Image (tube, rainbow, N blue to C red; front, side, top):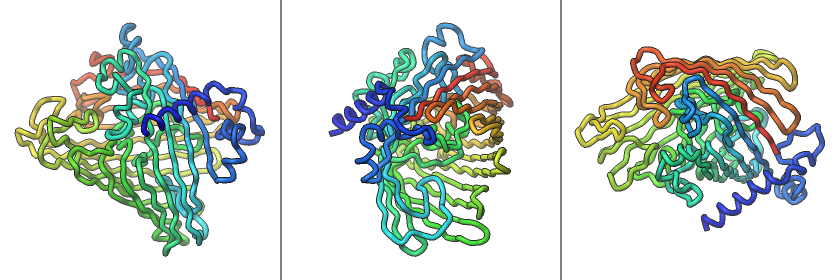
Length: 453
């Protein structure tokens, strides 16, 4: 059954790539998202309230620290995430299939103003992706070891050497709006928990301003499997406040080998005019491998017969100053408990593990120069004293600093360009994270092309 599903999605992705004439099948005053599906089966899809769209994400990148032989392989930009390969990279091609619900909450994103709907509403959301970035979007017990992901699923060095492309389905969830009390929104299945400011992938309206990701993004859970409920607890002159939470199986895990339930949750505030957003989000759960017979690396770096709790907290403030300017500030804090016993082992260092913690902050500001052109800048500080939080992109200890400047130019309704320049450097450490552990700084230039269809 899984093979059939995978082949269906692979076929749909290839069809979207090799039918370019359909990209321009709808009027120019509409965005390109869904244009291909509408051209092929728009009447049927609209009848059922289903939206099908695609996204092609490719990039080209170079840095000043790698050698020629390193650039021929993958991941030579590490510890930078998002555009990890130099040269041309098929970052990802996505297929989205969604039936939105009618309710007072967009799952994983925001509560909505206005009156609460009075009828039940059911929907779903599915995302499949193929490319280099799918390597880190896979989930244990689901797509981690699909045959399309061999041999790189068991041999990360081979995947790096051959720049292997991976197939993943990081979102397969059902959604519902229940008109009970203030209105309850529920979603369950496999999904990205949206803990933090940046949310993969790159839909047009996302807060992902840059081709590369922040260090804070690397520490956040990629996927979870579970059930979450959300409801507004206040609507009034001071805005909207909502809460959400629920049990999940673990980080990037449908088959958690320590068999302990974890918890995710959030509190969100929106100003009355929806121009200011404040989010607090968290994850808490045991993250260790229970035995040598079932090692789930790189998601779980510890081995222990006792629960070792991991916690992640994120606070994000976003504000629209006017029609031209907006900005955001994100702060993160995390910790991985370790009891220090001889049989609680860090599988990277081979030593008894007695705990790690990390923290960071980043701020960005954007200026919309024209309807099609937006400039953005981001600064970041991230401290990983034990060299734990950024694994597998880095095991270097100490602080990371970064300045990123870029722009987004919407060439038309279907194509967007995102070039950027980025400078990273380390501080308060003797470890070297860049240029295959030769340097403490790196300058990177990246050009990203996004095609919506």
